[in-house]
Length: 221
Image (cartoon, rainbow, N blue to C red; front, top):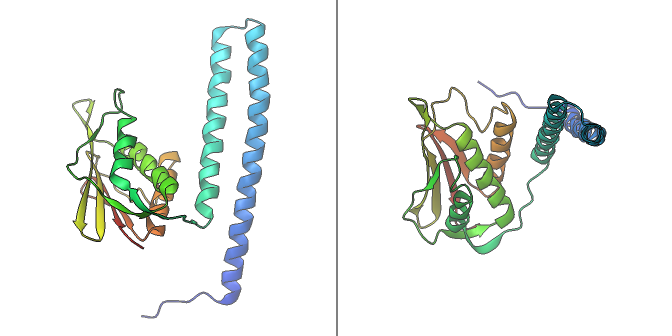
């Protein structure tokens, strides 16, 4: 069975549609920022006029919702752009991830670095990989297993599959009926999709296997 190939005209239309979509997203983000400005001004007026607490709470929730929507739009815009890497040699990916996990320590997030691996170094874009690891951690926390009303501890680990490949895992997740790296189902999975795109730009892969996020990264390239 032959796979249908897009014609040059269809490719051009897709590219035009992509550019138009990104412009629409940019415009929506600008409108949200304008609404947030007005909402912030209104909150100040409410605070000065000593209005009921529920009114202040409502406007605070509105501003929070606008912030989340603007953040999601920023992520979509970033996803729609090519990933341009600025790789550096000797980036300690395991240390980077361990520090991100430590930033959740002492909270109700329940994330634990559970790895004996040390010295997983490679040629990576430090800042983009750090973003990807952060979004993977946050996504793992949103998808963690619950038993008897209690959330499971997320175990994060790093290891060398061989001399050329590193594997990073987030275990303790609940079963999913979809690919969280491809579904775009809400804010958290939009960020997981972008994390996967960054990983793939490094030549690696992002998969959901046996209730785990499994990330592979080549150590050179």
